[in-house]
Structure formats: C-alpha cells, structure tokens
View 1 (cartoon, helix red, strand yellow):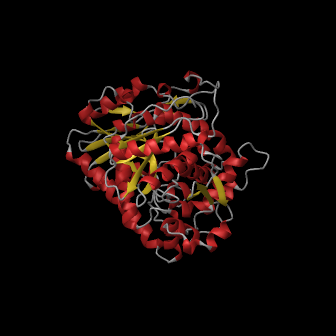
View 2 (cartoon, helix red, strand yellow; view 1 turned 180 degrees about the vertical axis):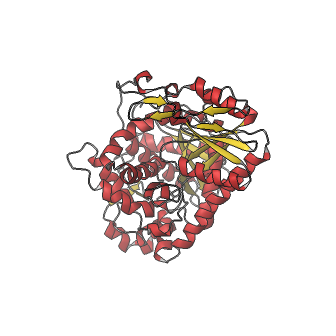
View 3 (cartoon, helix red, strand yellow; view 1 turned 60 degrees about the vertical axis):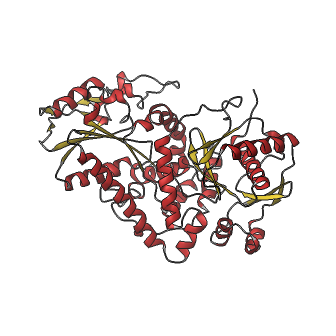
Length: 488
C-alpha cells in the first residue's frame, strides 16, 4: 500500500492550486478557510462565486503541473531574512505576520517562477501528487486529499450545510473585526486595542446565546434542550449561560447530568484496546433516562440517581426532582444529538444544540489553523488546572478522545436545531502562557515530545494576552480558571 505524509501532501497540493490559479487568474487570491465536507473549504477573492468553468480550467492546469513533475525549491527558511525584506512583500497578511510576530517557522518556496509561503515542509516535486478532488461548493470550493490511513481512496463526501453557514458567519465577523489572520490579531495587541476586541467578541457570544434562548422561548412545546459537542468545546459554561438566559425569561430550568445514568463500571463493554468504553451511548441506562424524562414532562417527581466514580456504581441518595409548570429540562453530554438517547420524547418537544470550537482565525490566507489543535490546547490547560493532569497525560488520551468524537458526535452534528461556535478569536493569545508551562514539561524521551514541540512552535505565533482581561463568565474561563461558574 502506498504511504503518504498527509500534511506534506496537502501543503504541496495547495501550492499547485495556488500556482494554477495564478497562471489562469493573475488578479485572483485563493483563501483557505476551514475543514468542511471531509475536505478543506476555500474561496477565491475577486471571484464572487466560483463557477464550473473555474473548476474545470484550474483542475486541468493542476493536472498539467502534476504531470510535468515540476521541481519545488526551498528559497528561504531563515525568518530573519524574511523579516528584513517584509517591506517588499505584496501580501498584507504575510507582511503583518512577519512585522508583528516573534520567531516563527516560515518557508518561502518556488515552483516554475511562482513563490509562496508555508509553515511546514513540501515535497520536492509536483509528481508526488497522485490523487485529489476539487469541486465547487457554496460559492467557493472543496479540496480533498486521501488520508494516511487510506491513501488509495478519497474520503466520502459528507454534506455539512449547517456547519458551512456557521463558518460563513464566523468568517464574516472576523473580517468585520479585522482579525482574520494572526498578524492582524498581534497588531491589535501591540497597538493596545486588544481589550476592545475581547469585549466585542464576548458581546457576540452573549448575543448568540440570547438568540438561542429566544428561539427556545418561541415554542411553548419545547420541554427538553440537549447540548452536545466534542471535547473542550465549552459545553458546561455554555449550558450555565443558557440556563441564566432562560431564568431571565421566567423559565425554570432543571439540569440533568448524563453521568448519573451510567449503567455501572462492571456493565460497560470493552473497546478494541480492551478498555472499558465510557464514550459509547450503550454505557448509559437509556430506558431509565427516557422513563425519567417522560415522568418529568408529565408532572411527576423522580428520584435522580448519582453515579459514584470511585465505586463505579449508581446510587440513590434521596435527590428528588420535579419539573415546575414553567420548567424546561437541560441535558448536556456528548450523545445529546443522538435520537436514541431521547427516543421516547416527541421531536416537537426537543431542541438540540451542537457546540464546537470552530476556529476561523487563520495563520494567513493560504494556511489555516486546525480546530482540533485549539481544542487540544484548551484541554491541556484545563486538565492541568482542574485535574492536576500533565500535558503528557492529556496527549496520551487525545487519540481516544478523537476516535470517540468521530464515532459518537460528528455524525450527528447536522441533526442539531442550531450550531454554536464557542471559539474566541483572541483565545490563543490568552492560552499561550498556560499551555507553554505544561508542554515544556514533556520529556525528550516521551513519544509525545515531537507533538509538544509542534504545539510550542505554533504558540510562538501569538503574542501573549493577559488573562485578567477575560470576563469571569467567558467560555474561555472554563479552561484557564477564575470562572464565575467554577471553583478552580
């Protein structure tokens, strides 16, 4: 089976795309934006809507470049040299990044007279590319590559129209705030404008949460709100802020924790590695949960169980709950979008919310920030503060976390009634100092040393932002501590 370096393959294919577009449309600028539909979504500036003509012409040109096996040369990898000649660089995003950032990794490559900037390695020639797809989507395009685990096939196309809409809205707000790229964020930090940016960004979150509460209030039939999302999305803080909004609207939320409906440790199935699988929906007592939800909605009182994580068993401790006349149930947990979890409740009585950290701040126009990297950094910081876990321990479990998300969360995200983007455009500047203190502790002998080094290099792109500027009800406080809602 053919082996590929997925990141190097993707970077090289992007370079071919940029070169092909430049040859055909010299005034156009390709913008790489976010992950979507099992590929990467991008737009072309100065082309309002990408048409099939563009796709056909660019693909033909890309195929020609690949067939010619053109050499790719590293022109310069010395950041000091690039900084000294930043004044001559025409691209404003690259110029701002060089002028407003410390020591970072940036490389200038050349292919057949065309030059561009990357933050990783490329193949030495275009002939290394053998499989890809480019197609129009939502006014832009989707670029797809094979994965390292399945290099002979392209991943299946999964339509994510709701997710696309959220990305589009987030990108628009970043443009309005003039912080689409790291260089612009750092520039605002240096100019003393970061506190205002923080207040605007937090106000946007408040506005979105208020709108979600208003949507719930519109329907008198909604009695159950489920909140789901991947690890480190800020689900708990979001739930508490939504609860406050519903209280302000004279509703009486009753919060149900899914943890209390675990079957019990001895009843859990084993995963492929022989470990107890706490992530599967079958770890929950779905029959009891549905019975309790129905009883609450019919006005009956229930005794809520409590899961003892020490003994691994459910206990009944005399905690009784009844839904008031103006009450509404809130459930936060990874299976909140899965219909199996609440299959006894009618659809018109439910409102499903998907929350995730959908990063729209990118390094520059051609190089994006991976959403999973932001969530990983959030998790490292929170685990160290709230659980005393090391970065090593968080990195060790991250692969299992991601596998659980792929199986139990992502397939259901389009079933949500609404998607909330918990990302804050300024957050990596705040997380930087917290994360660095933990990542630097990963030993050179660790198998996760290279990953810790990669994350440390990535954090170098950001200027530090004081955590004191972050409001105490911010989702970010869930990770750095000092939240109004938590003790750590």
